[in-house]
Amino acid sequence: MATKKVIIVEGKTDKERLMSILNEPVEIVCTFGTLGDDKIEEMILPLQEEEVYILVDADDSGNKLRNQLKRELPNARHLYTRKMYKEVARTPIEYLAKLFAEAHFEINESLLMDLGRIGDHTKRKSKKMTPKKKGQ
Image (cartoon, rainbow, N blue to C red; front, side, top):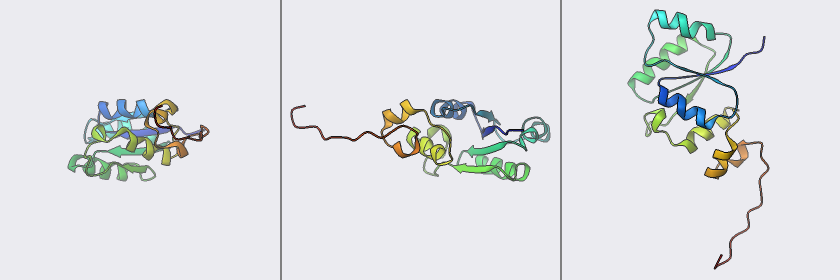
């Protein structure tokens, strides 16, 4: 049975932000905070055989959730926002796109072209840039 990619985030805004970046079918699960036993059984345990990635806020509640998920999903891959951004929702799109490209996700090419920063992580061919002359 083929596994699917699943990303676990804390909130709806995190999910929407990632959906704008990713260009492949991915299930994004929102925990809406820490998980009680019922939520773990309902939401998390069915994911044990999937390719799971965890991206939560760099704060106390995010760390608590990450530790809880480490116990429940020991094979999950953990992705991190920087402490200076604190929240996934406040993390710059450029950083998130690079983070997921490095984790081998397909990234929305039009986003990358707009950002112009992460060309090595996409399947598009790079174009040779020629400098503009004065007056153009």
